[in-house]
Image (cartoon, rainbow, N blue to C red):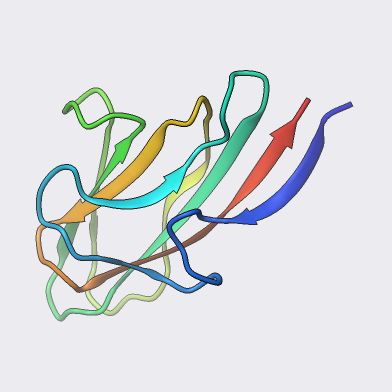
Length: 117
């Protein structure tokens, strides 16, 4: 029977937001998935835009080759938490990185449900 364990994003310190400082690949590390291929990380990511302009956020999902691993979204200004990834799965130590069209205005929050076989 599978078990679920809630975890912090590995790029977070004590559950605090991760500031997206980069404006180009390879971005800021958000999370490194569980190693191997038998377990899974269900990753929930939310973004906050603290600027007064809309900002494009790019998540590099497991690789930095565009467009194969990219998730792109524009986040409205000062609009609170915006759901970016609704529990997408990743494993095998693949990494999620983030960069945005404006530095130091996007904050990433989230968590991981680690699913073990």
